[in-house]
Image (tube, rainbow, N blue to C red; front, side):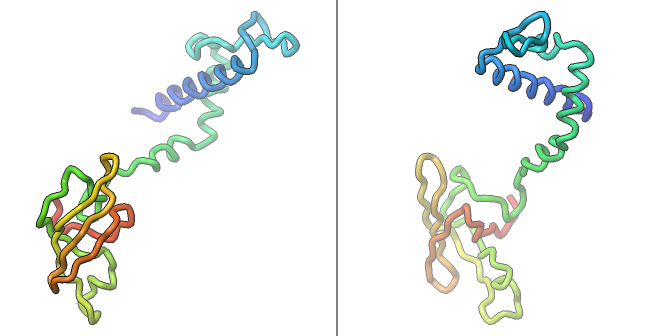
Length: 154
């Protein structure tokens, strides 16, 4: 999608929000702007605005740098350190601790792999992962904390 098309779509959405706000405040469409009577000639669908008002809406949205901000909200996680999900939970999935210090071979406590042995879910969301480590110890981890990562990219 071209930026100009995206700005037009966002300007249309912003215009709809503006219309909703004015209508909730008691404004209605009129042949010309009249603040006393709460009438506004721009209370029409975006595609019915005159060219000058459409251009102002597009310019207004464009000054917000919102296309970059919207794009920055997207994070399609991939790779070994993506968040764990309930649908991929299986006993025996190999994991390592996501602490970089534990993955450093020069440290005294190398990060030995563990395996998922149990998990808990609440309201369809993965809440806790229980791991058994190579030394036989077990620990619980909360997926949102990002403490674990997969050994292999799946």
